[in-house]
Image 1 (tube, protein in one colour):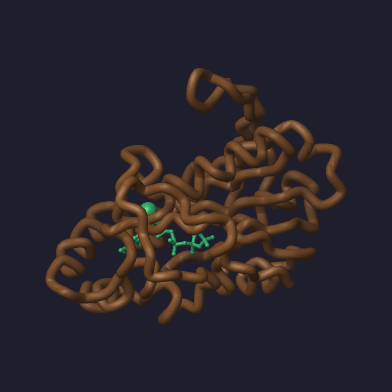
Image 2 (cartoon, protein in one colour):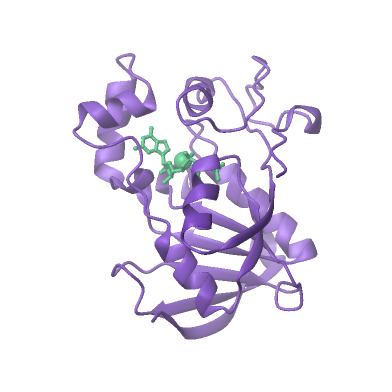
Amino acid sequence: MAEVRNKVIIPIGKHNAHKAEFVSFSHLKDDKEHVALVFKGADTAKVPLVRVHSECLTGDIFHSARCDCGQQLDEAVETMAKSGGIILYLRQEGRGIGLYNKLDAYSLQDTGMNTFEANKALGFDHDLRDFTVATQMLNALNISEIDLLTNNPEKVSALTQAGIKIQKTVPTGIFANQHNNHYLAAKVSVAKHTIALTGHHDESDQEISDKSKGNNKS
Ligand SMILES: Nc1nc2c(ncn2[C@@H]2O[C@H](COP(=O)(O)OP(=O)(O)OP(=O)(O)O)[C@@H](O)[C@H]2O)c(=O)[nH]1
Ligand SMILES: [Zn+2]
């Protein structure tokens, strides 16, 4: 059974404005170093807000404009620093295919394929992520019911099937720009993400207004 291995509080964010407790685990389903960031308030909430975030080195670390991961992560940190919550940071780079393969997939996308076609062309399914590890982490934290911050219905089913009760889903912001509009469009048309794309995008990578946020409350 997965267990909490260690907890340590770390100042994070610009100017170290926030604090999160970083939790590591033992006996997770795979050997990767998945980590939970627990923000103050999550411990006392009956149903905490949870973001199950898949690693994206290009977006999370280098703020790549080809996807929306970095901005979704920053948004989760800001929201949870204010009102509590938990980020499960899962080491599932490239929807599970790894960084080098994702970069290969980007090259194929530069020739006209969409993100899912590129995975197929490289010999992978469109999404190789297994969210069992997220369930193990939540169980180890004694959490059985959550509000899930996502636009991805497959994540909702995977977590539900793995035994996590999802009280409601909360949509993330929509972070469209000239470089990621094809990527977001493919997420909507193929993987049925609930992102209300307007066709408008902002070249400075600003979040489109709240009005256009996906609304997938369940
Ligand atoms: N294989 C592949 N992975 C990508 C690509 N672009 C982003 N990713 C990865 O996709 C993962 C994020 O998944 P998304 O489908 O954007 O979003 P999601 O996490 O399923 O859904 P949300 O909870 O709504 O954010 C990260 O691991 C990224 O590294 C791509 O073109 N190809
Ligand atoms: Zn990304």
